[in-house]
Image 1: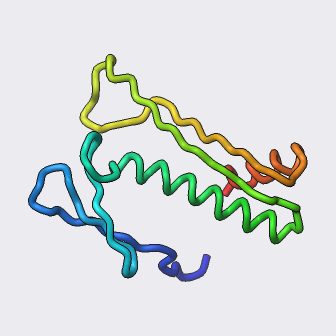
Image 2: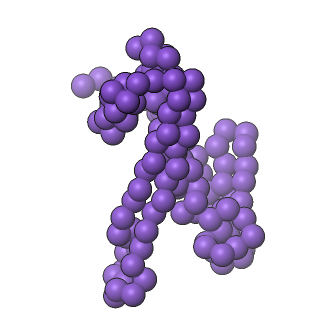
Length: 119
C-alpha cells in the first residue's frame, strides 16, 4: 500500500450557541444545527452528503462506462426508534437510499447502484 494522500477535508466549530456550529470546506461556509433549528441539521447534512456521493459517483461511473445516464435523483432517509431506550451513542436504526435514474436500462441501473454500494 502506498502513502496515504488527503482526499477531503472539512471542519466545524462552535458558535457559542449550544447545538449550532459553523462548518467549512475550502472557501465555503455554512451553519449546521441540531434537529429543529433554523439552519440545516447535521443529520440532514449527513443525508445530503451520502446522496451527493451517490449522484456524483454513479454519474462518473456511467460516463466512464459509456452508459446513457440522462439523469439521477438520490434521496436518503435515516430512521431512529425514539421509543426504545437510547444508549450513550446516537445510532440510526435504519437507512433508506432511493435511486431514480433516467436513460439507462434496469440492468444498467442495478449495476450502477451495486458498484456504488461496493465502493
